[in-house]
Amino acid sequence: MALFLFLSATCNVTFNGGTIPAGVETIAIDNFPNQSNFVSTTLSQTFTESLKDKFLRETKLTLADTDADWELSGAITGYQSSPIAPTGNETTALNRLTITVKVDFVSKEDEEANWTQSFSRYEDYESTKTLQQVEAELNQKISDQIADDIYQKLTQNW
Image (cartoon, rainbow, N blue to C red; front, top):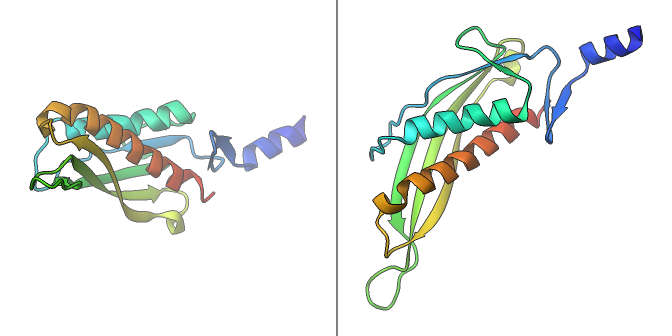
């Protein structure tokens, strides 16, 4: 029994394909403000909540406001809709919404593990619809995808 307790205290813990080091119990996720040139009024909240939900759903980490074992902060740095599939009539069949988020990761226990990286994802939508018509749905999909990417980056290197 003592060997089991020793091993469980010193080993990394695996959750859904990712590993979190033993001793990491809390995570602080700051609000990610939208600093892109295009303002989407709900994007900051949508992305921040997607990121929090991902870690709360996939791990046993507790969300903390300050002094956490892990800290995630950053900003939404890109939000762009652009045509991607031209037709013969000088119009496009599809548009692409691309969101880019810069993320800073800080580990209280292991400074060498700290990193800064930008994550970018996109979704296409029909040009017969305006961005405003599909914005809420696409923002949620892309936010979830970027949250997955951040989770994978954070839990794959331990």
